[in-house]
Amino acid sequence: MCKAHYILKKYILILLFGGLGLMAFKAEDYFEISKNLDIFAEVYKEVNTTYVDDVKPGELIRAAINGMLKSLDPYTNFYSEAQAEDYRYQVTGTYAGIGSTIRTIDDYVYIESPVDGFPAHKAGLLPGDKILVVDDVDMKGKNSSEVTDYLKGKAGTSFSMKIERIGEGELIKTITRENIKIKNVPYHGIIEDKIGYLKLTGFTPNAGKEVRDAVIDLKEKGAEKVVLDLRGNGGGLLHEAVNIVNVFVPRGEPIVVTRGKFEEDNQVYKTLNSPVDTEIPLVILINGNSASASEIVSGSLQDLDRAVLIGSNSFGKGLVQTTKRLTYNTSMKITTAKYYIPSGRLIQRLDYGNKVNGHAVEVADSAKKSFVTRNGRPVIDGEGIQPDLAVDRIKYSKLAQSLIRNDLLFKFANEFRSKNPSIAEPMKFDTDDDTYDSFKSFIADKEYTYTTQTEKQLEKLEQQATEEKYYTLLEKELTKLKEAIENTKRADLENNKSELKELLEYEIVKRYFFEKGKIEVGFDDDNDWAKTKEILADNSKYLKLLGKQ
Image 1 (cartoon, rainbow, N blue to C red):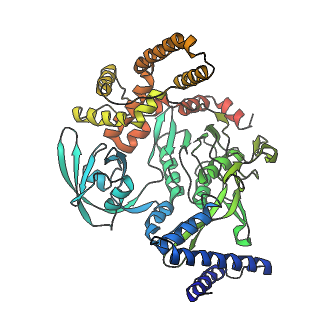
Image 2 (image 1 turned 90 degrees about the vertical axis):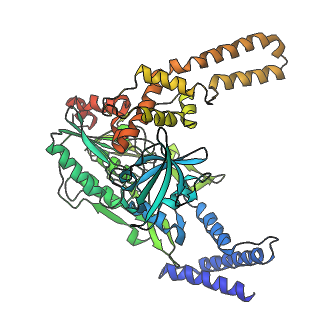
Image 3 (image 1 turned 135 degrees about the horizontal axis):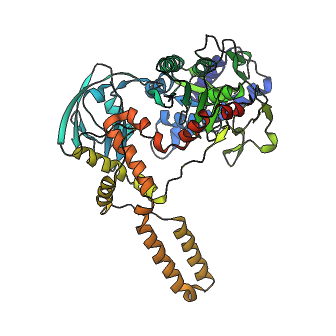
């Protein structure tokens, strides 16, 4: 064994066993680990020494680490020193920058949605502004991640940004970076019929306090019912989920039990504070992107029969991650436990311990178990959180998908704003026929081809007919079908007028009202919201869903 090989193996062993502390290993476990580290060190030495091209040792090790962790689950990740800031944002929701989302279109990155009160907003940046230059560096050809690196920096530092805005040309903006703490509750308000609504987008520190404060404010303003929107919320800190549940249930209620390999991973999390209101009618909105902490909140409130869940089946993540600090300012997030909500169910959908062709499979129906809520309603584990009332998801037409994919709605909204200095409030704004006609004119010379399922099936039919030598006999009929489909597609702009008007409303309102507008403009065509109003208007039906009648 060469000296470099020996040192590498010894170093890895020290890291491994030093990090594991007093954990016990059987002799055969130690031998298996030692043997495979020996093999790894040998492979690493040979590649680093004899591979035909120059290699970067750090990149080799990082690839090895990523490959190892990929064999586990997607939530166990390693973070290099350079990624420390990104990881801090994931955990705390805090970073130093300008406070705006951005998006890439063609060769440039555009401002998508500045956050009220932060540097991008203070500097007067608007959705649709094209970022041309940052501190004399041309941004053409750079993607969102690369541009973000220029926009982030130490709080208090300033930089210049050259933008292009339709109707105003090129503008120079001076922006001073700040510490950005994104709110977990970006919006709350009374929408109609004394229904208080709050949107929860994260579970970073103080999420529980933000929800508590929002509910108190809604009640002071006259709310007699509350809707908590968890759609699209991918989760975060477990204790903040417990704090949010605590807003609606008494102190001392067990909410989550975690179970892992070691005693310290086995914990019972109970509510610790006095609630705000344990009786006010409560609806939780969930969808397929509601995960982890969102599922703790929605699932526990369902198990305790404290809220009616409306929407679609949640993501199904019942795994708990712990952050481990490593050497050289690196860290990793590792799955250390599974969590169980009050009924006793584990909502994990995918079984990462049993993979087929490298992919985790869903928990088999035969392995799923039935549980009951506090009032005796049946619930099932292994499949996320099922809503009490399922609502069909909106499926966009092929035309709409193509217009979105080609950024034509976004581009039209930019042009619209350049010609219209103001519009009605988000919940009152509608895309009128004149605006829609302008949109049709705008896209008349734009590329947005799309293929319908009917066309795909017709293509298969042509291939089959050719193989079976029927094509000549059917050619005339097939040609007529093609022409009919093309005629129908030409009419799609009218056939899908209602759908496209709603999508245009969303894009246009964002140009004037930013985050508030994105939320408020959606209520009039939100199927989940329509079902929510229906349930909250009928107390008998609401109580029956909770098993209280």
